[in-house]
Amino acid sequence: MFRHIVMLSFHHPLPPGDHDEIVRMCQTIQNELAGVLELRFVTNSSDRAHSYTHAFVADFVDAAAHDEYQQAPAHLPLKQKISTLARQLIVLDYEA
Image (cartoon, rainbow, N blue to C red; front, top):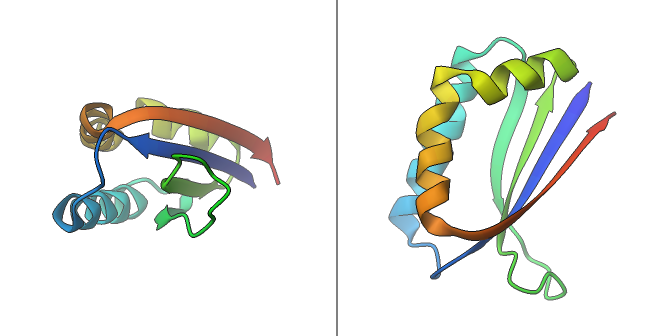
């Protein structure tokens, strides 16, 4: 299994409508790409995370499935949405 974590800080607090739309986008990706085991968009409850308020946590069958996800047309709307809202992000990828 391959895990992909993206921690996000946003320019402004994330409105509930945008949060819900991102969750729906994650579900669409999970449904469309066979190599995606799970793709979650979560709110950070830690008070030690500075401005990183949300994260994507994704599990893939392997690194190749992750690479496919990065290039998949289904991923493009999510990348575009996040690029307009996010101030900064940090990525952590690893074999689990």
